[in-house]
Image 1 (cartoon, rainbow, N blue to C red):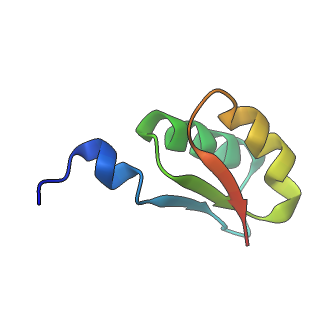
Image 2: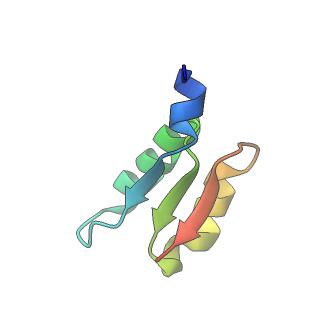
Length: 65
């Protein structure tokens, strides 16, 4: 079976769970996930609203622990 880049990217969840992550790190991570078109961004629940805002218009879904 031959997988394309897009096939593989949609199998990945971009994890942003580092407890020392700054707001700038979080926003950069969300934008990176959108640029690479991953399946989701896994974040702490308190970032969910902002994550959804940053991912609006993309196929990347926000997810929480």
